[in-house]
Length: 160
Image (cartoon, rainbow, N blue to C red; front, top):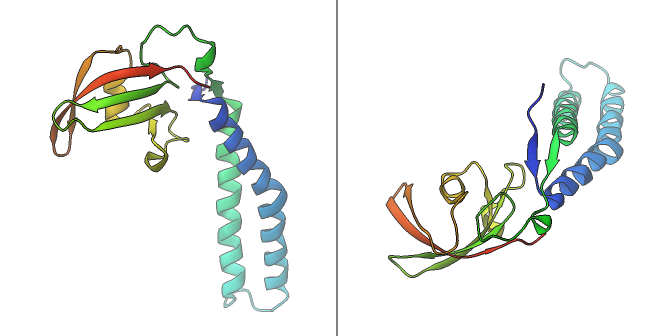
């Protein structure tokens, strides 16, 4: 039995778009590149051929990975959950650093969706693991490379 992959609806859709692009655009393009490189003769010394074969391996591997994940996805739509102020997968959390007063907002998402530049935090990250199950008003101490950070949960939003 395979493990379910938790993901938001937006994250699953992004993987579907990537999979479609790999199958419809990238795969045919690399197959054509291999065919073109073969026409240039000796394959042992043909850099284009080897590069195209390597690219093909990457594309096929990524297609398999995406098909597996999408086949085992568990889409979690927090907008359908009762908003009880608890931090759960998919919620957006407003935090305040109790030492610096700095405010930050993160959405807790699956590993494949995580992007710290977009404030999307993996549910397996130390900060997310410390926040999960906590409630608005709780102060959470998190071990980070620079020491311990105390973060107060200001608000929890159940947005799609």
